[in-house]
Length: 110
Image (cartoon, rainbow, N blue to C red; front, top):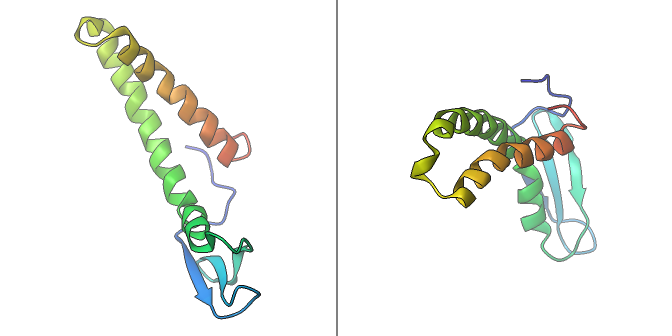
């Protein structure tokens, strides 16, 4: 695991009655009262805020999933007869895709 360079979670949303849309939606983390992000889109403000607020949890879960998938690939490899070629390819490629997403989320650190 690499050391995290982002604001530690949990991240949550805060909705206040301000702004052009009648409400201001911010993503807040810990003691950062001013928020780490303010959602300006008038449409889907809350949905976008929830997605952003879940980023820390999604990253943490994905890092665990990579480890599990790599273990499963080593276990299943010798017994490939039990799954289809497409299923094995998915199992083999999932950690690669997950690591790319983690690298994007962490600025290149996997």
